[in-house]
Length: 202
Image (tube, rainbow, N blue to C red; front, side, top):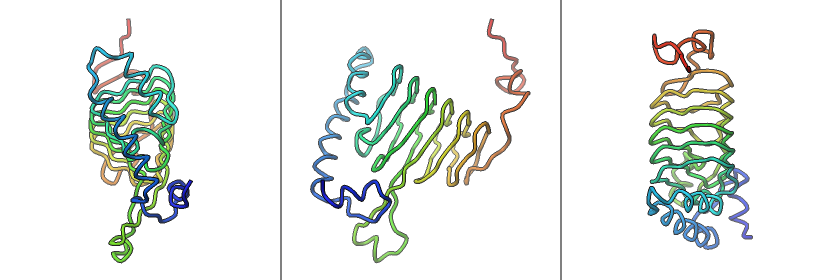
């Protein structure tokens, strides 16, 4: 393993165009391309491919193509029962951890990669990566963006279009740019699922 490849997962500055890194990445992206070319009727094939592509993936996960990922899921750790709508983008240059039963709306982006603010470093092509952790039973609405190094707790709802720049605790609804906690999940949510629509699961 090259020194540069080691640095992908330590938060250090490194060159992502290192030959060993790019060779591994291209191989994984070829497999991702094949996944995105599967037909809707090929559910079993998709499941088998995801188990090969991901670092870890639990049972009952569904990812709607097209799915975008810098390393084809190679640094992604999914629990069980996760659902992702189309255009999930995982910039998985380092590890992304997602808990059981979390849901992603369309066009969600989870980014682990960053570039230095200092122009002299950026022009040389330096990069750094920070892992992202998302808890169990969360719902990230359409168009949510999660930045490098963020941790989101369990049972969290992130409103559509939010940009998550700081950690979010468990059991809250958070919205906005930058994303802020709006309120805790509360008694009202036990009775109503949407505005004045009462929960009736008969």
